[in-house]
Image 1 (cartoon, rainbow, N blue to C red):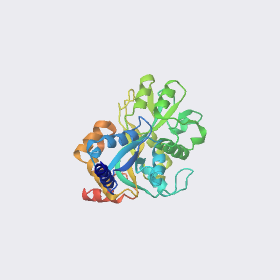
Image 2 (cartoon, rainbow, N blue to C red):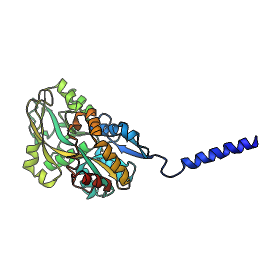
Image 3 (tube, rainbow, N blue to C red):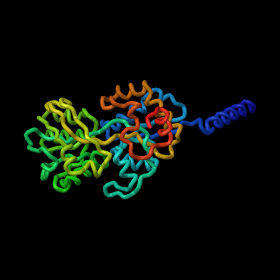
Length: 320
């Protein structure tokens, strides 16, 4: 009996030693997305559920919702999220201490890949008479939820245009803004997201909507000269019901980023899986916004340092 007991103890000890050996436990990679239903969260969820990534033995990806771009920047810099989705402009501003009301420099956030372009979209009613950002003075406007990239970019652009302190600001998510717009509680609402997006489609079902030409405002005010990471983008005709003409706007690049302490091997391996033919097909099946994801454009819109694992991958692909 005693011998059997010692044998069991020995077996338990052996199993414990094996399980505690370095490298056998999966490393957890928390991937910051965004508000529920938003495209940022779709990115994080899509990568988490991709079967080849789930099958990797060295690490496990865990998607986590967040307030959006600027919150992801801060959490990734602090190491509370190992990877995230952040706008290129916020990575740039954060690295140089240029964020609104925040002079801290977030230098631990390194670019991994370009995902998609996110254009500004300002939704109004067709009979509103609002043809420019300056026409918003005195109006009730949905400006995105606090902590999100949409809110930060709205504040940046509206301050540049001189209207931020002249509107009645309502900080809320896209779907809530669309609902408030439909109930005539808002005169306009702002989005910074890939198109088509459900909130604008929802608004177009209940109202005759229009999109404001933001590119004209940006060009005439010197916005592109001051913020070089923004670029002109066209929202094509018929993207939304009733908007049967092209709408010029501007976009920022949506980036996959990582904390500088994430190992080069993990970043390289994740890129190799997501940007494989199978990985790109998977991403495109999750949302139309990802239709232009490709190896050829994997380093587009990046104006800040790359993670070494990403730099190795893109150099091997001939992109850099």
